[in-house]
Length: 100
Image (tube, rainbow, N blue to C red; front, top):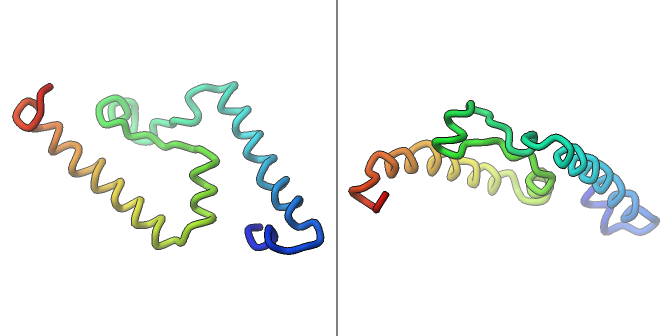
């Protein structure tokens, strides 16, 4: 679909509509059913304590299609290290490293 944006013959409009329809539908679903967009993947405790949630935003899927897989894996690895290792360590030192 991305390659067709640069082709002639109406491929641009078709690619735009193929992306616009699902994005609009998803926006309407998340607007009507609050809580779907920020799904507590690891449970409510992890969501409340560590802010771990699965964000199902159309922009995230769009970035995944546009950028290279190596970059996406780097961002995911960085998020896992920050959220899974560094944040719990910093939280354990609350009061010593920073004011609570």
